[in-house]
Length: 493
Image (spheres, rainbow, N blue to C red):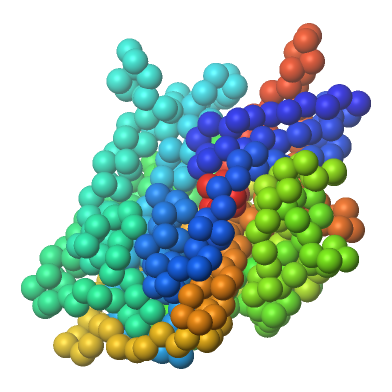
């Protein structure tokens, strides 16, 4: 048996290393390492509660709206305030645009470029993959044409966030009581035109058909039928590549999926809250009080007796010389169980029939994670059009006092999955602040029982090649890691 360390990984957000035990050319055991510590939770202690709206979003520059939303919801819960409908719509528009941009860039800039690289030079589709997705190299202006187009479009899309929030990243307009910036009628029409420009790129390049046609696909049989009519689209090319490289059987996760609910409405969420059990095919209710963080394998101090703590009682105290630890990430668990989060979880919980059918057939694997992201893209943009059209002349913000003593939880969905902020206010100051990010769930280490996290499970069985000097390389490991789309800077907050 050989021990290998792969990392740092390129085309992921933040620093990541993966320690692998390899036997007979396949991963026998994996340990996922977040090698940096940042300590944002401790930066917030003793501050005015509203400082969280400025500090927490700076955890990350690519999902800062998600952090803003979770922080604002935690403070809203503590203050007992409910944003008005217009405030929810404006916030949802900013969050949806950021999430949509993340999904599109994950596909074009993080995941698909691997298929245009030399590992697949002998495959019949390699030329198309290189032309559309490869990283742009000097002397190869014909490479990565669609990836470059997606990057250019992303710039325009995020102008919408800047218009609604004043700037991006780190907008200051998302507040516990709603949005600080109202949207006037003429501006609403300009924003709607920009959203329709986004639609044109997605329909012309990614899908090759109307978004509603993709969103209406109700199973793998319908997807195969559609595929026969849309051979020029990037989704169709991905499906061909997935078949040829067996992505349907690569990177199976824990089979239980968590969503905190996406895009809050006056009642409920546009994408529902809950837990999907892949083994039984059942939707289970979410009980946030069942969240616990286990620090057994983290370079962080454990509670007395080693108990796993609810985030409302959690703490972040570095212990860099802790025996047996191998990461700065705690191990979040839901009722003691490992869960996976992300677009695949949102679409399973929300009942999207194609994603449910694909997961029933193949499980939560590389193929179904990417497919779920693309399905979510097709579903998000029509929602954005609806929210823009629904904005009226009513208020965007509800004024409220911040109590001197309070606690609250802010549950949201970032592009990568379930995001939670928990705050306790004492004497008008933040007495405790804890964050559980999506990659905290997916890239968690082992817990006190020795149960590996979602990615650690998914890597088992992946093929690994070793050279004469014992160094390892594995395109399969890269596919699995990138299918989760890690954001390690959020993980080591």
